[in-house]
Length: 283
Image 1 (cartoon, rainbow, N blue to C red):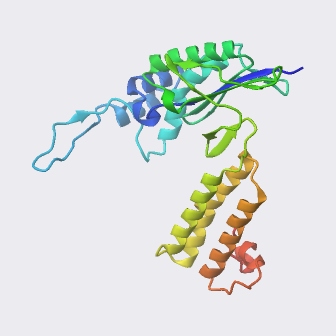
Image 2: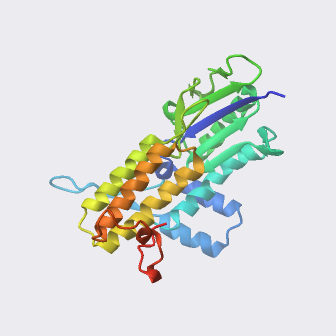
Image 3: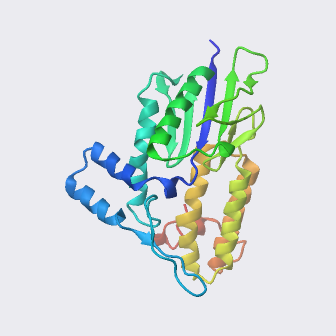
């Protein structure tokens, strides 16, 4: 049977910098974290302040009462735990969409949230629920960057521009052929899914590595550490056309050969074979 599917992609405004510290402490305590661990987290966040240096003087201390610490290895874990009440407010309900005999209601990757329902009324109910949870935690959704898609398989024009609200603000509806950039990949109904912008950024970053003052082995290490995983992520998450993928592959081969001071006519195998066999070990 043909179904309806209503989806909302949500964008939190300054999510990492606006989550209140008291919410972090309350959530960790609610999840039963040991008191010794809670004490360490409180020592990291309580009493923090900053000052702004002006031309002639510094401002008085400005207390910091929200946000996780940038660069701290604990921050992603703390943020994910602090987001859990929002996710459970949705996943604990009965609404969602049946996919391969499994009920799916919310997808989350850090601060990128997706709500899925099998009709528009239920999606609006989920948006109301997560909006109340966000109000309770002190977070705000940026409605101008939130997007929705309503597909009805029973109608000739499958995509409907149904209006949805989050925290009282209208969400931008997608039409057929329009895409939302979700995790760097175009997502929508009947669209070209090749993430051309992301591929272009990868090529630009490869050129920056090439132009840097890094040693050849450091350039290869930067390539395999930062760029190759991004390419793999794109391949797992979207249907990439062959032509732009070939361009990335050819660019990487040319760069690695130049870093190894090899002629471009040299065999490609040297790029991919393991270090113990004398290769560059590029995945």
